[in-house]
Each structure stands twice: as structure tokens, then as C-alpha cells.
Length: 249
Image (tube, rainbow, N blue to C red):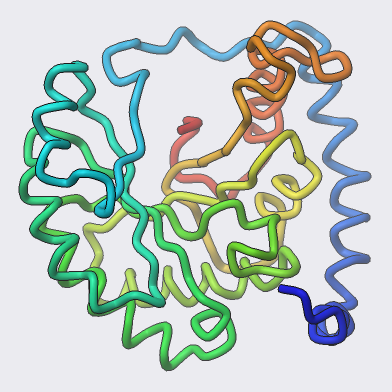
């Protein structure tokens, strides 16, 4: 993370991505913003599965099922660190104890997985075989616009996702892949992920907006409070052909 020369080398390798990103953003953003301005609003959302919670294997796993039941939460996320494959059996046992919940697994790769397709394929097979019995929903990557989560440039993530999708299509057809999980109000990165010439498709869009970026959700960041950010994201999504479902998770 602190090796500036390494990061500069990766950016030089994918120098074309900077140009493509800029052209894509300049084309798509005005169209999406115009659609937002004319009063577009998404359809009402059911609150049945509106609230969820992230749970971790290292945070009181024995008490977690009872605590979730007490809270009435049935939608959860579980992070899967791919540099800790030895934890998979424990994750499987943890998942089994949460059989009353809908689980979204979040795949967090290491740089080794990003750079080595063979290692990625080997570990992905192990992950899918171990965890798919408990949930078919996998988010590919997490906060992909932050280097500490494994990716330096959007093109790296797109290449990575293409490999994951290829394996899914070949061997695990019932698994659903979500992404790109861009963090914060950085829709220029989301646009690059959703408008590209890669043979990929997301089963659903995931976005990691900060609810409390300006304190309360109704406080504005520039012109946008949380609801307006979601409306703008939905407008961007409507123009993309890279989504199988027109839904935001």
C-alpha cells in the first residue's frame, strides 16, 4: 500500500484506462444527470428486507444468531478474505448457524488474487464449493475504488470480475454475482464500471454509500442528500447494459 513506485507501475500498465474512464464519464454523466433533473424517481421499495447487518466470524459468533433474532434482522453480509482460506471451514459452520438469514458473501481478494489468475481460480473454486450451500449470493470485491481493498484502477477490477464470472458460468451457474461495490459518492468510478466493453454483467448493482457522510442522511453533500444520491445512482444504472436486474442493493 505504501509502495508508490509499485502503484505508479500499475498505473502506467493501464494508462489507457485513464483515457477511457474520462471519455466514458464525460459521455454518461450529463445524460444521467439530465434524467435525474427531470424528476425521475425509482419505484417504491419494500421494507421487508430493507435493513441488514454485517457480521464477522471473529465477533462473538456463538452469540450472533440469538442477537440477530432479537433484533429481527434476517439480511446479513459476511466478509470472505481470500488471503485467509484456512478460515473457510469455520465460515461454513458460522453460516450454517445462521440458516434463518439471507446471506450475502463479500469476496475480498489479495493482490495475489488480482495478479495471478491461477491462484484466483483455485481459491474461488474452494470458496464457492464451501459456501454456496448456504447462499448463492456473492459480492465480488469491496470498496474497489480504495487500493487497500485490492484494486488500483477500475480496469483491474473489470479484468478480475471477468475471471470470476467466467468460472461461475463454467461450473457454478446458480451463483449470482453482485458488484461493483464502489464506496462513497464517487459515481465517476461507478460509471466506468457500468459502461465498458468487457463481456461481463452484474446480477445486481451494489453501492457502498456512507449514510452519515454529512451526519444525518438528510444533510447534503453539495446538492445531494442520501435519497438524491440514490436517485442519481438509479438514473446512471438505467443507461447501463451491464446489469441483469434493474435494482440497487
